[in-house]
Length: 281
Image 1 (cartoon, one colour):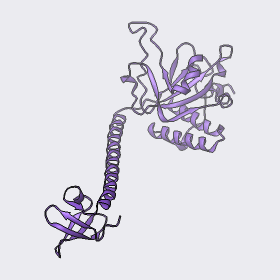
Image 2 (cartoon, one colour):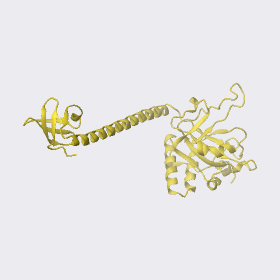
Image 3 (cartoon, rainbow, N blue to C red):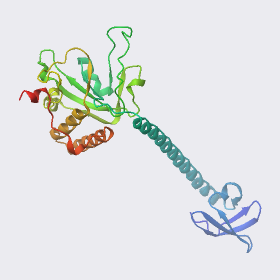
Image 4 (cartoon, rainbow, N blue to C red):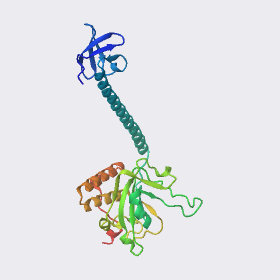
């Protein structure tokens, strides 16, 4: 807005004329007494434009600038609070010893299979006996470095046909030993759902192995079991290999990079899967 030569009235110095204006400084001539002021702050308390139309237009600009400044300040404050929260999370992770099997794999029932990829959360189930019977299972090994792997097998299928339907990183602030409701929420970014055709290629027992009985493919009872960190990296790597969409591949590559970084794994040296099905081949 061009304010050069506009006449003003200053509360202290009286009448004058604007002779120069840059981004932050406005220069006013009070009858050959030239003074500089901070622009646009000086208009809020000390200076009034004589031209009412120009004053009205300037006021709109000042209001817009103030709104923009407030929005910028709110953004800076939000970023500051996010950084504080991230620093606290990282401090927790530095003090948290990563367990070699801090991932979790679930055997889904029909209802969970329908809902898990809509809600992106899963229930750990209830304790079946003892003094804590009926209370949610507490997944104490899980923390922000953990992923939840979802698997399913139909009742009339052999256990070797158990398929991986998808997986997600847990929420960034999640620590299983601090959660009482048994709900495991997903990370806002790192989550994968496989199509039926893709799931057919991702057999759980290609990865998992009971070290005591390496040729057995038996789930037995229980809704979940803890899962090896390296096996989860293998799953992510293989999902990348079966995907064909470039955007999806890029997203899962970021997932794998994040997973390896937070679990202190060497992404370049992920071993090939050696699960129970691989042992029998």
